[in-house]
Amino acid sequence: MKTEFDNYGELSRFSLEDPEQFWGEVAEKLDWDRKWDTVVGPGEGPIPRWFGGGELNACYNCVDRHVEAGFGDEVAIIFESPVTETSRQLSFSELQEATARLGGAMRKRGLGKGDRVLIYMPNSPEAVIAMLACARIGAIHSVVFGGFAARELAVRIDDATPKLVLAASCGIEGAKILPYQPILEEAYAIASHVVDATLYWQRDQGPADLTAEHTLDWCSELAAASLVDCIPVAATDPLYILYTSGTTGQPKGIVRDTGGYLAALAWTMEGLYNCPPGETYWAASDVGWVVGHSYIVYGPLLNRNTTVVFEGKPIGTPDAGIFWQIMAKHKVRSFFTAPTAIRAIKQVDPEGALVEGRDLSSLQAVYLAGERTDPSTLKWTERLLNKPVVDHWWQTETGWAICGNPLGVEQLPIKAGSTSIPMPGWQIECLDEDGNAVAPNETGAIVAKLPLPPGAAPTLWNAEERYFEAYLERYDGYYLSGDAGFIDEDGFVFVMTRIDDVINVAGHRLSSSAIEEVLATNASVAECAAVGIHDDLKGQVPAGFVVLKAGTENSQIAEELIADVRREIGPVAAFKRVYVVSKLPKTRSGKILRRNIRQIADGDVPTVPATIEDRAVLDEFFQLFEQKAESV
Image 1 (cartoon, rainbow, N blue to C red):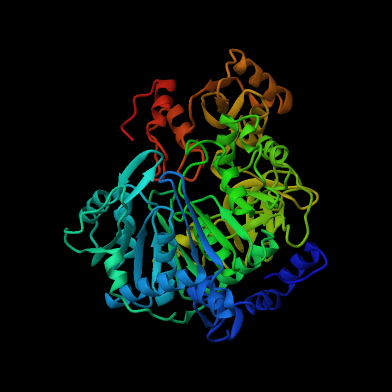
Image 2 (image 1 turned 180 degrees about the horizontal axis):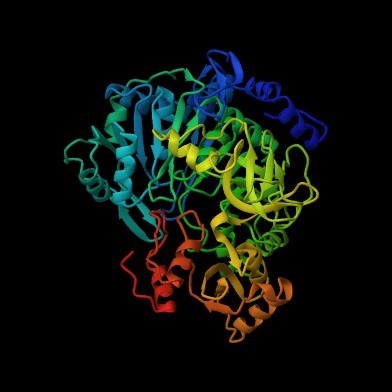
């Protein structure tokens, strides 16, 4: 599903000069119940609405049309769960029946177009079925990462006001069984909104109590349900709400429209990810994150790719070779994961011994996103696999890549540290604090010129004003990404850090990622983070936090790293502090919590996000700085 051009430069220019024709041609590849009146038109604010007047159904485009075209026996979903030692597959025909039955069960309970359904499940075919079944009947799903804390779950329940919750009875975190029912019951007690019922997919590892009030059994409900057809919805109707953390502590409900989102994903599967129909695609993410929505569920299935759903960790389930094992077993063509997963593998298996003997001949490229890919990690992965490694950049708000290397159109040079160039429809600039464009290679706020291409969130759920304040108010005519970096003389974008993570040393603005690049090149360092901590004289000074590779001892590491930063960045960095720690605090998606490290170092009470992977990790940082902060 890509528009044909001789090279990517021509394609990109055409997408900016004539977006109606470009995206109209892409959208023609979808199945529409009613064709659009206009490709792009005005929205309620400055964000345009795509394919106004058009009607279609996401589940039909991802499932039913492939069955009707004769591909029903092809594998739609491969489920690999090393934590339960199970593996299974679903064909497109089986997926069609499962979504039709669950859709029928929900219709029987009175759910329909526009109603919200909260999904609280681990990575599993059932989670994919739940999302597609909601889309099938026109309901709006809101997936919350399985195991999310009760209070944060309650906030989302009150904001989305779902009629129904589709839940698993438990999740599995490594070797630990995490029952979901107690968390849900606590969330229901906290929330003001009353959910009509909870439908549990029972897992043998930790069943739910189905005698509790307003609880339903997944298997029983589906067995008694009638099969339902797909219901057309407006292209501008919401497909889902996905909550992401806000700077005020109040979560932001990212709204994703249906038509524009499907069109954007349709282009990316072949244009960016170089994955033709019938091939296997694996995004080693979670359905609770935007990557899971776009590239475990909707993108691959839309393009008739087999999608791999993985329940496990990159290391420890059972070892750091699990990624390579699954790729070889299922002949994965395109693989997508987070840099932190690769760094975890590198820390445990620095020589890459566990990839030996694996047939990865089907693998064409590895794609990394979720946080910045440091050059040392990118180069290590390239050497290990002898495949292109694409660092690309996108956000929950955008739904798909802002920048990347379009391997399906033309492989551009890979510049370590760069997310390559803007994807179709994205016009990226770097601005200073006054809104002026900065020179090539000069750090500034990275922004996207309006209008945004299809797939980008048009608003926040019940919070149009917050959307404007968060993304549009700072620079007139631009979307504020919240990231800082630079664009080089070739137009390659380098996303270096969050705007809040720029370190100001006596008026000199330093990127935390630039310092981290130097730290990461040391042979002893597995992971690192750099933050600016308060200094009475200079305002801020940088400090480095490093995790050493397994089995490594280096008593001179601090002196080595200080000398490295002084040599590569210069004395202006005033880099004199290095701390060796056992782990770095991260979110479940692998983002390092630099702000929390900075807050602890400065003696402040950290504003810990609900998505933190392990709160106990912060204790080491409290002890490091001998701070007695309130409980997190």
